[in-house]
Amino acid sequence: MKVRLAAVASLCCVLTLIVSFSNSPTIRSQTTRVSSSNGLSPAEQDLLNEINLARAQPKVYASYLEQLKPLFNGKAYKVAGQDEVITTEEGWSAVEDAIKFLRAAKPQGPLNLSNGLRLAAQAHSMEQSGTGATGHKGGSGLVEERVKPFGTWQGGIGENLSYGDESARERVLTWLIDDGVASRGHRKRLLSGDYNVAGLACASHPEFGKMCVLTLAGGFRDLTTAKSPTGNENKSNSGAKNTNKSKTTTKPPSF
Image 1 (tube, rainbow, N blue to C red):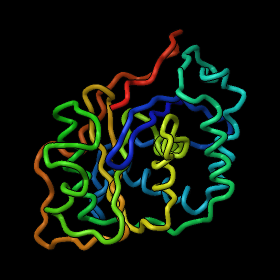
Image 2 (cartoon, rainbow, N blue to C red):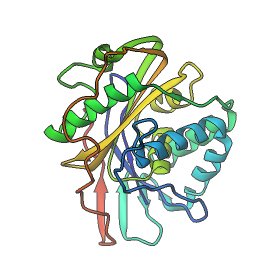
Image 3 (cartoon, rainbow, N blue to C red):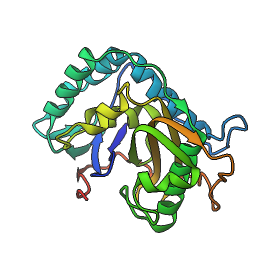
């Protein structure tokens, strides 16, 4: 399985890591049907569910990561059953650091869906789906500016980005590992008790196949007049799948 390491908050970098699990189920949804109940597609709902599972059971997610140690050789990671080798920035040490963090972490309550944050995430995913851009800054600025047409936030606010056609669990484990990010801000934000609400949106991406945007806040008051951004929402992924061809892969450059 492949995991794309993506970015969070106003500083971001795109990293790549391959992760495989022998005994842990992976949530994967390839459909783009939008739920009539909350506006999330099945894949988006999967990701929100997976995030809330990690918040509720951090020690379980530490056990998923512990399975990876035999697959590391320095900074190189070889996928079980495949010939592809991924060059990580920190190697096993980043995974080990995540395991220690998760073993000590206190369970947190679930993130509740905010429609306003969902619309802000949707606006960013749709923009990058069309332009092929990456990162947190879009035509409307950073997340703090992007949410203003949809409401007001309370407490802190942040954003996680994930690029690649990965499953919900792979995206969450990628954020938890946080390879190459000295602050471990992605991981801390995902499991922080300071965040209580979230918005999610996934769309196709011309370079990475698919992307997902997660916006988080301590609280959010939706504008009753806020409308969904126009455009091709929840585009299906058109990116190429991973193959078993022998190759060595390095992470995309930081930005």
